[in-house]
Image (tube, rainbow, N blue to C red):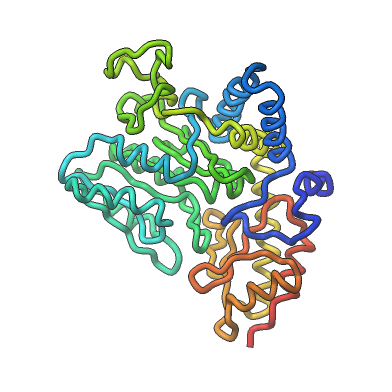
Length: 378
């Protein structure tokens, strides 16, 4: 990978050492150009050239490639939570059913499921153990009334990554559905919905996909599309579109993931999302993963050498692009502000710990700059 060429596609590198992709990432240059292209054409010709709905279909195809799905299993959402709600509201739950999740989940992957408790659905939150969710605890929480396991591929707070292949295999063997919140993994790690036996997946585009807020993708396994009831209805989910108002039966809905659409798409955002996805596909997601592993290894080694405590699991199957670290000798938010004001280094403060999340375009020298700028523990 030509690092100089890649960095030229991320203009933020001219102004900041940005390591906060687990929050809201900068848009890639290609994404910004695609969004501007949409605005320019809309101002010059309105809808008359008919460019952008065709472009959206290309983005759908590329998004499907990113997760090894079929294009008809993928549609667009505004954020991860919208996709979560499509499943939480769309499954025909029975009183006494239960859902298995973890105590580490971001609130967006908690509240939609807790809302089901009023319908008699139990939410079982498997506790963490030293920043990890032991696989055996998840397995023990599943019984014959478990309908679904919902989990983040990578945990937002400390970067713990679950073994989705193992989890998906277990869910398939037990006849349990698997939902994956992929926002902290998609764009860093290869995700294969077929090999991992993932039934549903949702991800916003504004983190590791370096796209604008208000964009994202939702995946539903083809065999389950007809079993998930659409919850927000509009003309775009119907086969007839706006040509005529038919009835409201199962046969009226699209037979693919478009049945979960309602009104018009965020075409500006989708064009931008597509440009960033194409960039990732061109570089290769495996290459991206290798690059991020090298950067975060350098960072972790330097942090430990200065006496800081690293809270992120770093084994071969558990590491991610998130590095959480702290020192009981210093005030974390004061350091975060100092890093930004004095060095233009951008990290986050989450749960009383600093959190760095570099992407593949960051340079090794930027890891060293952060290490050097931090005070020594003690």
